[in-house]
Length: 231
Image 1 (cartoon, rainbow, N blue to C red):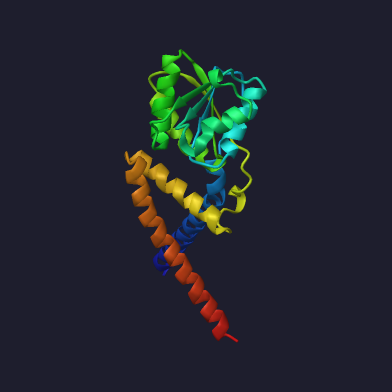
Image 2 (image 1 turned 180 degrees about the vertical axis):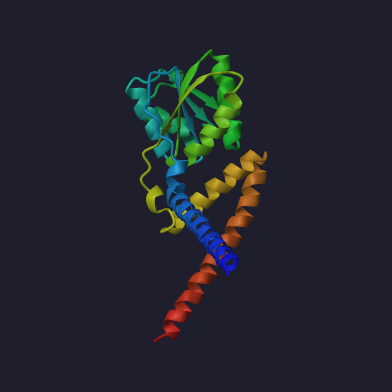
């Protein structure tokens, strides 16, 4: 009888331990889910640097942030990575940046390329520090790529996000656009980690996102039908 009682107690403890582990895992997943948007954002305090690097591919707010930092005296030059895209070079001139203070590279087709060709320009012009500007949700991937290319060079980088208020990291799951951006960024981070960049990454991402969003639309339709049927 005593042995059975001991075995019962031990089994009860094991069950309780399993429940505790499950609760801990669920708690961790909930916290990770809520913080997923904020993890993407890096916005460091700017400091005096040799150049400001503005990455193309987003809205005009990236260039506006770069020009603002330039006018406030944080750096004497601006590199516009893929500067012909969206006519960013002309836009910078209209914002009051002299052409002699703008450096252009037009070869970048991915965030990795932004890092490779911007660092190449920095080395050509003997620039040793930079403030790198992109959209807030893009900054984690920007940092990953620039630090990867910089590991053997040791340039000094500051990461400063544009003032883009359209992406809400605190409730990224509540709006379709924010949901797509967040999924997009995490898939690209994973893709970059295994060496997928540029057009190859964009094609793979487009396929994956279309499947995810189709499933979400189907789930929403089923939910609406269940609500209608309940009346």
